[in-house]
Image (tube, rainbow, N blue to C red; front, side, top):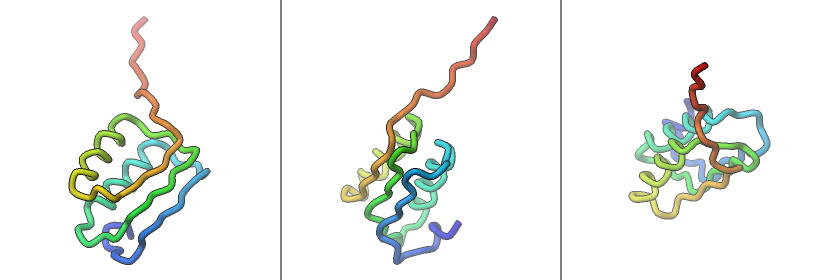
Length: 83
């Protein structure tokens, strides 16, 4: 993924795109996996994320406190229903 090697991009706007929570998490992992990333803002407006995303984002903010993310809210992972 290009985000793993890009060191110039500061703002990424992906709002209102058909991205699933797993895709959002993959983007966040790619940004975190690039030690020379200049990313400051990730816009995922109207796209839901899972709690795993929020937890990982909080971990990133410990080392990059100015990194900001806007998203469409946190959803709970699907629970397995037993009959």
